[in-house]
Structure formats: C-alpha cells, structure tokens
Amino acid sequence: MTENTPAASSPESLDSLSYEEAREQLVAVVGRLEAGGASLEESLALWERGEALAKRCEDWLEGARKRLATARGANDAGAAAGKD
Image 1 (cartoon, rainbow, N blue to C red):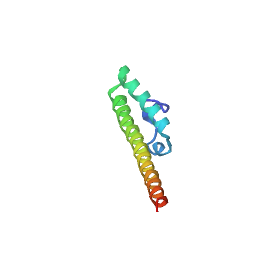
Image 2: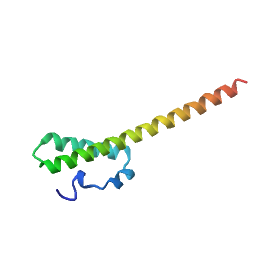
Image 3: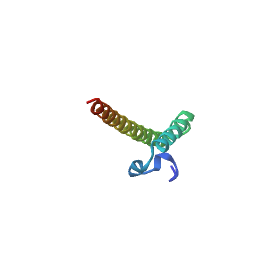
Image 4: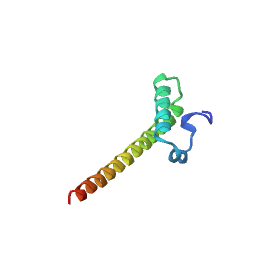
C-alpha cells in the first residue's frame, strides 16, 4: 500500500475535510473496492477508511440539520414576536 492511497490517510485528516471532499474520497474508496484486485490487507484498510469517511459525511449532515433547525427556530420566534 502506498502513501497516496485513500486508506493511507491519517484519521486526524478527516477532521479537516469538507463534506464534499469526504464524499469524493468515499466514492473513490468504494470504486476501488468494487474494482477488486486489492490484497486482503489493502481491502480492509480501504473498508476502514470508507467507514470513517461515511461517518465524517454523516457528522457534516447532522451539523447541517442542527443549524437548519436552529435557524428555523429563530425565524419562528421572530415571526411570533412580530405578531404581538
């Protein structure tokens, strides 16, 4: 396995990935796994990287949901205050 494979990236680097970057890397990992031909060790590393990337994407989406809920709550509160 070489240093430039998606599986070789350190877990710490996941924190700095945007949603789009994490999703793009996840698509690449899935493509490599589906293509086959990797050793068992490399396949396991790719799988682990894919799981970590999927979690990073889910974390981003959950954060976005929370921000939307907060914004909606603030808008609803503002609208209700304007009716008084």
